[in-house]
Image 1 (cartoon, one colour):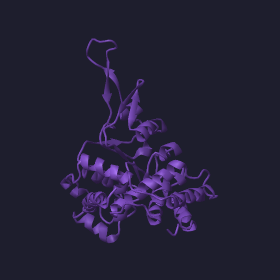
Image 2 (cartoon, one colour):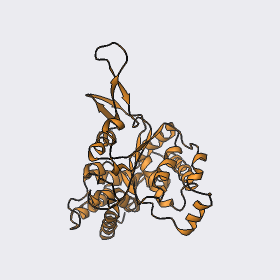
Image 3 (cartoon, helix red, strand yellow):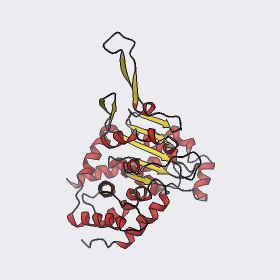
Image 4 (cartoon, one colour):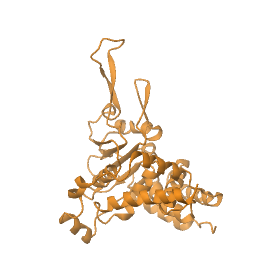
Length: 316
């Protein structure tokens, strides 16, 4: 890899971040993690209380990228087939008289709003598509569009009508962000119409699917040394030895840290990962994994921050 390639990714990321910052007021750090997750070929979970811009963040990210976009609204009566698609009568006389009708997950970017209002049965329909970018219905596996990204929002588990995501489902998301309440200055921007949902219709794609696919390929080649990778392993071990965590972060969690760290390096125009990139990636990559299905992401974030503070980064 050469510096020119990562500079291309940095420029692409700057366009995405700038477009999102123009709509989502006062959430630059959250926007940066969202874009890094997209470049890392990952999936994003957004958790917070209602009314802080979770869905807006997801929609702006989707609209800034050229390609197909579908939105799913989580409800307690939503069935797996409503998401993945199902077999329906074909209307023709053939062998079985059935054809496959694709569900809304057949898009480049899928926003699943209030995921944890759907039942665990429906949530489990996401496991295969989030891990393998395929959907299996009636024994036949069908690939999702490439590139593909799932952006899901959820409410904290103490909000009425929610079902906690299982550890397996949480582990499929590369990163989690918590937008939080807007500052007074940011709220003023929203209330006066200079930022927020009123600006959503004006968002035009600033990245093509071809550019995104090329950027993802470049990010995947960003170098990481054994010393920095060993730092990731030590961070994983710190979570496993923390008495507040029943089951520490998995190897998939480490893969997520490295993928995000590569994105942060590329966004900075570098061809290599530093320990600072890893520390930057650790909290969004692990907070939801450490929280588990019966705790808030905020609790997991606190544990991840503590683990970063306890583990000494490499000096080279």
